[in-house]
Image 1 (cartoon, rainbow, N blue to C red):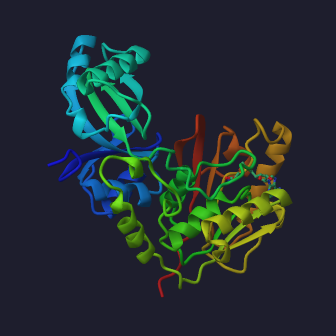
Image 2: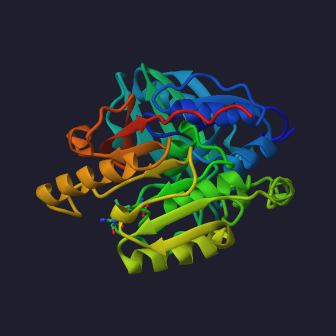
Length: 375
Ligand SMILES: C[S@@+](CC[C@H](N)C(=O)[O-])C[C@H]1O[C@@H](n2cnc3c(N)ncnc32)[C@H](O)[C@@H]1O
């Protein structure tokens, strides 16, 4: 039996603050994930499940096959542990091997040495490596002296769905945008508005969720070049296509004051195949109004450092607070790195959550409107 046949230990990484959302996603795909340790969640599955996780997860950064675990406090122990892995059945002779390293609270902490020793041990185990073929990226994580060797099956990080061809001003990562929407009370039958939509990430992710469209349908993954033939990807993408629901009556809108941002958002929505599901329009947030009640605003307004000066930002947040309160029983989820957001928005959030947009520490402020009356 080859290394990739049968049950495998799989893991996914996810950004700080959204691990619980990723765990819930895995559960709804039918897996039994572990709790998160340093942003990594493990679960059991086979090669096809690895492909499913890559294609279907909205909030994970990457999917890995966990290859080995062992204890190591010295570089000799690390070398032996790596050398004992059955590399011949995992990577081909011509593999181009890249090693990334992470260390938490461990005696082995020099990352470049961990990388070098790992590579040396693999070459020793394989006899030689020609490095002319497909890339295999390994992650060696040393956590309290326990080593995990994991093979990256995603390649390009999963936030890159493939629809965002040009980067707008201060865009939100697609995985984070999706996590915020999944954390919100919004469901496809409620109105969704992003009044500061920029390049369209939030409304596009909302439309992908509402139509049950897998985020990875239009991209490739590193595992498609792996030893085991990539026939699974075709069947997983077929499953994902069968899951798409197109007959829902959606009310998803994105507005931005900048017409170039709206052009970009339109282009991205077209790339994602959801342009007919979203209303995108140039508009100043100050004119926000709706004939619907119980809608949900999910947004990432300008936050100062790069986009606006402090005074302008305070005025903008104050006006945004007024516009929000003029809506009938709407809820709002606002992500910003500006510490005094609540003060200028004019209301204390009923819940806040710390999240990171790339490296930038942000908070998600939640304002819940009254729920719709039961029919
Ligand atoms: C942080 S960016 C949003 C980025 C977006 N989430 C994305 O992923 O591309 C904030 C956006 O607010 C827009 N903006 C600034 N003032 C506005 C206003 N008064 N009304 C509507 N949009 C405004 C900017 O043009 C900018 O595109």
